[in-house]
Image (cartoon, rainbow, N blue to C red; front, top):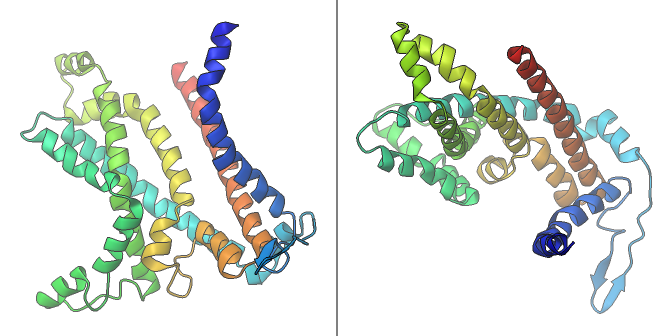
Length: 303
């Protein structure tokens, strides 16, 4: 009993922080999604007077409106979010794996390369986003200046829908590769060298060793990294908001920024909260299905 009490004392500060910073905002947001809350009926202060909240519970009205009324553009933004997620996660995994394979080899200066490749992960994402926005600037940006110097002309990085999506994907990929590289590198270093030695004795070449040893042994790590990548990218806010602001003409808007747009810019707090809950539900369903399929494949491969 004494040990249990001591354990509870140690975890109590973390639980208090979680309750204040995670659980309270989460459940408050879920409740607001079932109300008609906006800037005019929430609690607000005018001078010394405090006007109490007057919003009402309206059930699932916000959800049905979002899914059915064209004004809210849910399906268009949802499609853009799926494309954004796919365009990011695939290069994150492939480039991260390629760099991990390279750094897992005994090459000169390997430690320095590892440090340099982890730097994008160490820099706060909003700072990196502002740097990329400057790089993409049409008039004074580094890319366009270089292209003009070599006679290629300028590219509308942040004013053309296609180029803007490409630009934000590149910026986000640059930020995400270090995590995937470190994750894959850890997985590679956990593979026993004896497996490769046995394969060499059997006459296997480099490609055969990669396909029959490296990939199967690395699959659990890759699947976990993919799941985390989908969740983080689907919920990504900083890069889209700070680099392209969802433009041009909402061409790079995703559900995370769209929820903020309705809740903050347009002050329809209930609608913004409903969008956030929908994002949560989509990711919960995806994660549950993904983990179930992953476990089923693991059981089949074990048999």
